[in-house]
Image (tube, rainbow, N blue to C red):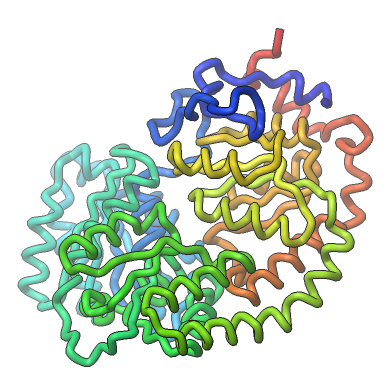
Length: 475
């Protein structure tokens, strides 16, 4: 272990949020998770507002208005890799830009004026209004303003109760699901075929929804609505006519799937579209649900065709990557499951895996599927992640935009698997793109020259770890 890793100790209250696969008793104590972040831990999590806009912003023909200071709106301006096959209105970020006098006297009039002006200018199919922290503090009646503007304009104007301080990103997911459900059940469903599904929790990052839709249509499955990648308001209105919901991002959309099952009788399956095993399993699960042998045969044909193109390429990458180690830190547990399997398929071992929103059953699944010695962590922070990466001497870090600086400061290759990326990583083609990116990153000769490989540590990291914000040294 490097001296830098030894100099970092966990905060005592964080110790129960870290586990090791295969270590200790056969039935270890459940990890502490699915709770508020520890004060002072500098969590990698985001706020409730972030969670809501992640889910709703890909609805391409809707207006998205952030009711709050301009800084919150900057958090939404085209930072996603979500794509649209038509309208581009969602790429813009609109804000009421609340100032000091608005805080004193209230921002309801300003919100009403902004909505009427934007709806007249852009003619959206619907409008979503996101409440931010300051709105929760001053008590604007956003619901009443939305109701009034909807009556005047004739389109749905939907409030999103996404005040950032009310919880974590996971609470924002729930707020978004509650908001989008107001559209459900308001459209005509008579022409929807029996073999039909909705895609929930896929956000069309770099066009991934289109890839999955293509596989399903080749099987003979009709996709009614995508919630919310490349989403359309009119399609969401009639999504209650589908026979099945496929939930790709379980953390963000399970609450909506459960509500559709309870109130409209639509069952749902939790699936993943990342990696060979999970993508194949998702297609077979759909075919088995409809109990149609011909459908299953077509699913098998799709898988065979795609694997024939993919496997020769993967074998070439696997030769170089076998034995390399990776760290994974992502938002949801289902993505973590898929990444562990995907890395295994190209010969790599997962040495660290963590999520922001996992629950006890998710972490038990990770303990079972990971190799002994794998560190499993919930709601980690930069210092912890740096410590674990140095201890495990990983070759790759898979995460999001907030984890990238950690990896590069430590001299570790990085693969972006978050919503800001521009590369399709879902489906069979996505597995090829993923393997190609991992190979190029891990095998780059630059990492041979990093101080970490020679027992040192980059000066910038050393200064950070030894500064006043570093954790106390281990005794």
